[in-house]
Amino acid sequence: MPALCTQTYIPVRAEATDRSEMVSQLLFGETCQITREEGKWVRVRCDFDEYEGWVYRPSLYVLTDQQYEYLMHLPRSVVNVPILPVRDDKDQQIRYLTVGSTIYNLDTATGKFSLLDRNYICAGNVPVLSSLSVEERIIGMAKQLVNVPYLWGGRSTFGIDCSGLIQTCFKVGGIALPRDASQQAQKGITVDSFADIRPADLAFFQNAEGRIVHVGLLISPSLIIHASNFVQISTFDEYGILHADRQTYTHHLAFIKRLI
Picture 1 (cartoon, rainbow, N blue to C red):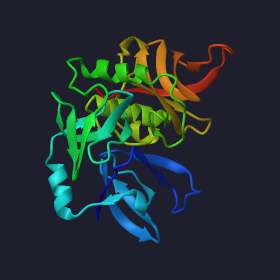
Picture 2 (picture 1 turned 90 degrees about the vertical axis):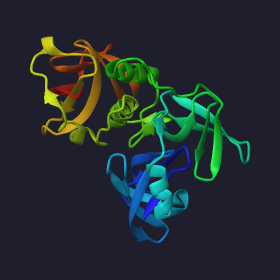
Picture 3 (picture 1 turned 45 degrees about the vertical axis):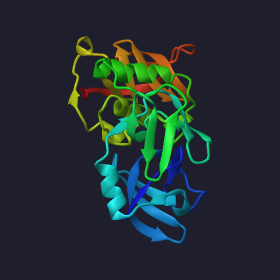
């Protein structure tokens, strides 16, 4: 059964309770498939990245098959600014969409778009397709998110985790990535030499057991944007990420991948 996120975001949880950890989020305009029901909770599979988790059913807009097919054939745009204020024509209320949200039927001349029976108008900058390269779009978006607080399971400007940052910035660049760092690490080709690093390559980091636990976006062979405590730009070398004040390594490099 298809469903739609019509809120700024909806928490996706590990278990069917609001006390369970948030493992991801559905953003405005994203769709999912309900695969199981348990009281007021439903297990969903997100269409964008196939991630699964539990959502409080009243948070979702459940779609008919006809509505879902209609949405799937509409032109879509991805919000490519940190926060996009939009006004609902029906109640004149302002809501704030986060980067990575999906909007349908956008008229870039007027800033108007629709979502089923609701009409909206952008109260901020209208998302337009950039003439920049994919790498420039991804890095530019990441830089705009510097100082956003870290939030486990977050994919939004209101709080984001390390893999959520990468997934969201690549989404702005037109590239769909899996949700978790360990899944993202399976994509692309390995960059074997530091001399071959290009902007927008991804660096993956491991714990003592060799498990991938962190990911960041390389600006250069010596600088990385990543979400750890908050989104920040840190010093990077062949050993990992160096803490600016303590001069110790906070994350230990496993390998570098190129996805573009």
